[in-house]
Length: 432
Image (cartoon, rainbow, N blue to C red):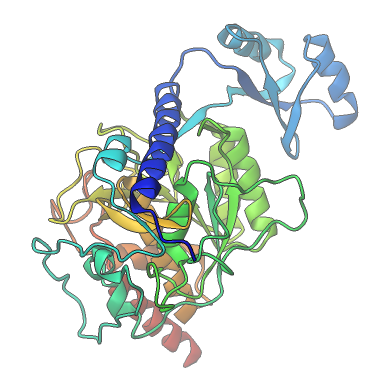
């Protein structure tokens, strides 16, 4: 095998990351643009009269999102006026812009503080000097043989390593609604479930975000390479909801939630957000929850005190980010939608080109909660999604003001305590 060219690898990898970061910066900047280039509608008429209704308004192209929900592309610069016109027509039960989402990663940290390694290199040691052990029931800490494990400080900080003495997870399916995934990554091979019903779906991850999120949740573990996933045996069902520029839309997320349900997904991880309220998205999330799906999302990276969606919808677990001293990160959005926090600084995980990287943002705090939820269900499969959410909240390590607060929510994720509560509940149920 040819010798590994460290300099060339790092240079090309950083260039790719810079390009991806520029795309994401553009997506964030356009999130709240006053004008819109597409709109979501729910017609009042039956499907057999839809064409006539659309054509009467000068709409010749539209795309079905799900049953009786459609997205209409609009001419540039005409969005706001068209939304008002369609609302005034009386032909639709609902008209709203097809809002854009931004990926919740910290771009400036991603390429200035990044630690890049190929699968052939040893990763760095994590600086854990400032970390205090989380209070928990005494349990044996499991140490896998993955070469990058010592760089994954967040696994110890959230007591995932102690939870592993009880369970390393089941084959439960987690939906990752993101930028796609590198299913050929050595730490993700065999962990990705494709959508076999659709040959048109391209899962290629050109940005890396979805690959990074997936590795945190369920990377191949104890395989003497790379990193450890939180739920070792869990499978990933990726749905690419972003376009080539890194933008996602309400319509693509709504459609992806339906697709995830059709594949038997129990947990949906959404590491993107918007500050724009969407009734269509709210209804889609509520439907997913009614179908038994637990939705985990980011609190957002705006650094402001504002509601971000879908985290602000009822029943969704909104996750903020803390640093290695358990202080809230400056970028982490605060507000009533924050339910939990998890480490979000320098999260070592899988990345593009079979590599590994340290990434930051609420995007990488939220998947830790999704992974913990998967561990909970592995010991208590009869729990419903509301019960799993309740366990995650009740087991959290309180930070900030006593009880729930808008900065830390209910507190820091405590995976071991959550698994122990779930195990007890399962035992109590089977005893009767």
